[in-house]
Image (tube, rainbow, N blue to C red; front, side):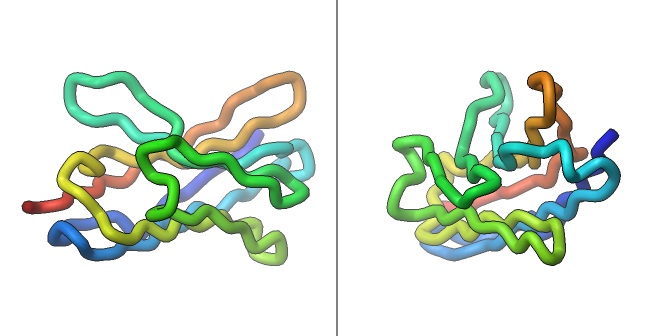
Length: 116
């Protein structure tokens, strides 16, 4: 089992920045890919960014050039630096970990609200 705890959400004006953190505990040796997803009201959950154990990253087109995913393996923590935030970035952001056998682990979610 893997436990994920997110922090760092909040309210920010358009153009501002926020940094989300996701700390993992438990069977972290089984995790291959870490990532962030988001879900806006009335919409499906969508991928924001992922980072592999080796550091390879992948971003949704809508956040490329504005968001940066990174990881600190010594702290078992993944970060999402969000710059130039837009009202359409408003959503609940979920931390994800993909483990052995394709098992997905999810955090509890953290609200990000961007005001115009």
